[in-house]
View (spheres, one colour):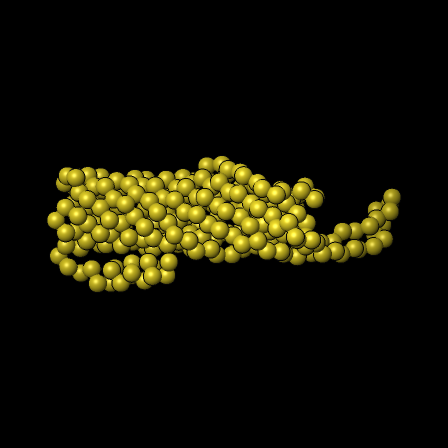
Length: 233
């Protein structure tokens, strides 16, 4: 995956020929994630369901991208780097205490290369391959909203789409991307405290405890649909 980021950067730096055109774009993004969780049966930590298949609601975000369009007759190669704010949320329930948690895909940085063909002066089709680093966050749902995990996961991205060129500078892009994200099973410790009071609300004791939760092995299938405008210089 690092090789794709590196190759995209190299192509961006050395694409100064008469056939290369720098562009910058802004996208509106809709995303949906389905996930499957599998618990480690040998874990002594608070457990989650053995298998859990869920779908998040459709989430909407924005993205910005910059790249080079390198044309060779009717064919083109377009190395691109981008950042996408996804804000995609899913809910996870721990069986032992029935607490709700939010699994959030906050955003992702991505490097990819598109390979395309111009069917006409104003219409292109393309397929793309790349690598993405996604930001994941798992939090409690409640008054404290404790952060359980916040990590970055790298995985490949595949997609395709069409481009409609309005003129030499402006155009519109419609695209779809698929990314599979795997989160390894691990345990986290959550510290909590509560007050013991009498009938007159006098504090009798302050009790602290630490609970170990198993974050199950999670397979996330992330689907994104994008529509946006780009400007070529």
